[in-house]
Image (cartoon, rainbow, N blue to C red; front, top):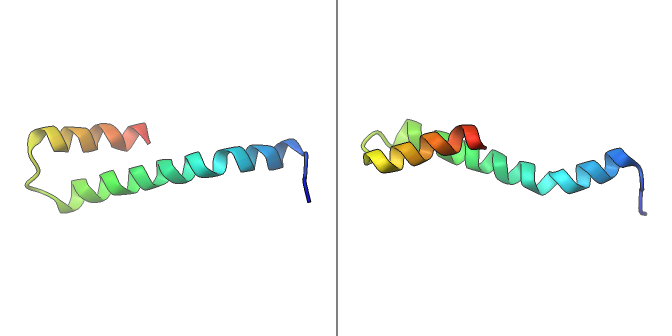
Length: 53
């Protein structure tokens, strides 16, 4: 059943990008917390990915 309401279309279009962004945020935060001995460039990459998500 196709629903042409704007809210339904918006939810359908943003579902996957928001899920991907949440996974990136979660992964970068977990890496920052659990991996204390990361090289500087990897720590910087994780710090940049956190607010980008």
